[in-house]
Length: 187
Length: 349
Image (cartoon, rainbow over all chains, first blue to last red; front, side, top):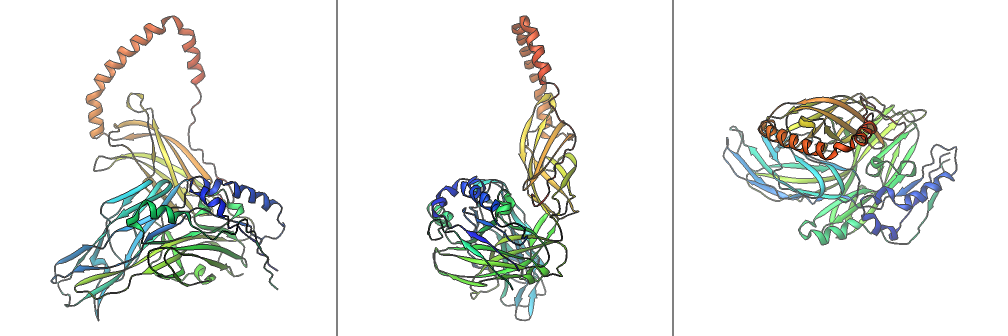
């Protein structure tokens, strides 16, 4: 027999107060529910009492489709793919997040240009709030690598950059349109 | 027989409004096309652990079930489609990295989402339930993963080279499976050293080892004292959070001001992962650089200014020597030395 006890608190009244950086884990509601935990049935290791976090979310810019231009075999094409913004409204006392990028190979029918022939340069990074952001210029691959790291943050913060993707077209490449899927992730 | 007791305490029957939405819209009108996610439920036992407020962190016995709700938000001005799925993750080179696709792992096979695809109206948000059923034969140890909320761009026709973006926002999972009580969260600072980068940036590097049974997300600060001329500097924060799996070793790098003079310093490092902290003090050498040469040029001036100042002080305080001596006695003996890691047990880290 397994019991799962969930306390859900849709507390509209406290949502306003959750803007304060410390409120996320120091809110009076969390404290009062801690008391409730003490009176919960004991002896069942599978009973988990939970409380509801009332702060904001970690968000990211919606994806787009970017044309990098045309070039001859042996040349390099590249273009900014549009701004990326990470917004951390989780109101954390010690805020941090990591943004990674990976890419599939560039495909044109049966021909491919490997992802490792492409580069991701985050360029200049602007930020709001208290956060230290570090950008890393990477050679793309099928595996995610960190491109921008936010650290030493306090409270709500955001960072924006406009990455440039450049592709070195191999001298042996077959003419045509090459498309890759670029995965940008933040957690 | 499985019985599920759900107790819903609706203190106020408010709809799930998200504070970030309105703030974002009013503060930055150009940045509205965003989507995201946040953890909605946190175990009461972890209420004071800052890591538990952002990630799914738990220790469970084989055969257990965990349920957590997440809130998915569409802050875009158009209807948007999202995929929600668990993905494998690993801790490597001091980083927690979620895989690029829906890579399978033991943990992802245990994890189910109530809604795997979502379509949300502009400004709408919805709760999704994450259920992790840990089988009785689950591998012991810590399992890592991410719940991704993913949005993909629509493909368009292009000439030359083009990229179709897929953007994802995720909630990390650190799930430890075992018998008995939770393993300890513990880490030690094994060394502290000073360097100067090729660009002339002075840095302090703290080498850390995860000696406990759970992963740690390390951040912290360094304070410098007893520098050239007795000056102090800092605190300086870490350049990047370092995540270590049990047994792994990594470096936390603290970048100092470029004007910091080279020479010998006393570095006090304080690191934390959740509720677990460790401190260390060490004498370090920061090689000379532009800052040091500037200091060398300045130091005769400072020494003469200091000597004049001391002379004036001595003249003023000449008649009150006993009180100064007493103050000196009081301030002695307040310095601490050596590594003093304090590891707490349970899921404190």
